[in-house]
Length: 169
Image (cartoon, rainbow, N blue to C red; front, top):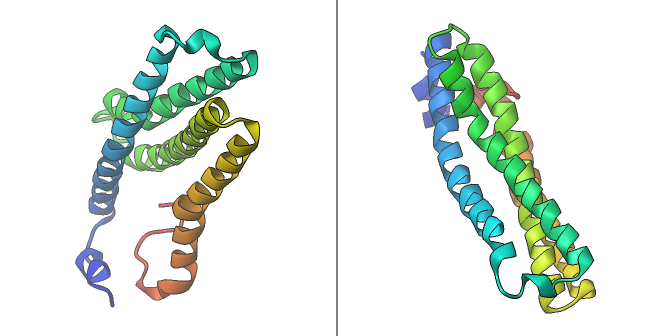
């Protein structure tokens, strides 16, 4: 049995919920910092001297990635707001399950936003063709690292009897 599985083998359901909640908060701290910096950067762009030089399509792309960044920020901060509203309400199972779902949606929004920013920058600097290549490369990168690889590890590298958490957490 793996060391982590041994450590958590004697947890009660409440202890597992507390651990899952704390692990989720640690993960969110990393993602929140990145998305907040990205959103702040995007919010300042229209005030730059060269922003007016962007084409109408580039302005539209900018607005899409800005909205994506705001959505990602809202989703990644939402679990903290959930906790504040539900504090001591006895809804920890609901909180952990919903926070997991919202955080996952936030990471998807963040990945799409980063790929959109990559597309916009390549479009401005090199043109539409290289921007499309960068877009495809970014999508493959995020889908691979944030989706496919962890899923493959879960399915093929970790024996089912050594897993302690349900699939949806």
